[in-house]
Length: 86
Image (cartoon, rainbow, N blue to C red; front, side, top):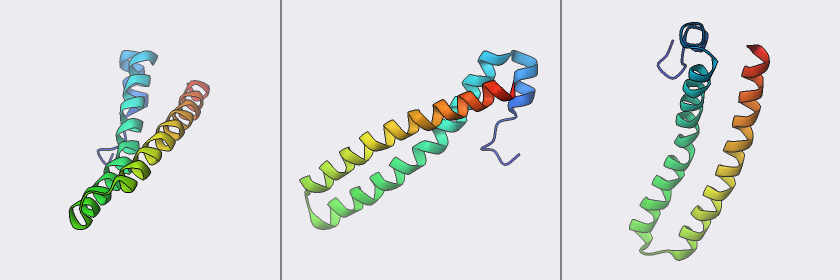
């Protein structure tokens, strides 16, 4: 147990499926939030160095749109895998 992985089997056994899915989503979402945080940090440093850059902001907005669609699709896959496993 490294702190990022939730003991989902134990949570499910004790609290039930709905609470376990909730904790699984929180762990999944937290992991996926590292991508926009890292890219956002790079864009922020870039804007400090280069000054105001509207093209960088547009690129970051496009990245966030793509990231959000991918995150939802991958969560659906994870949720279905957990439902099948349980």
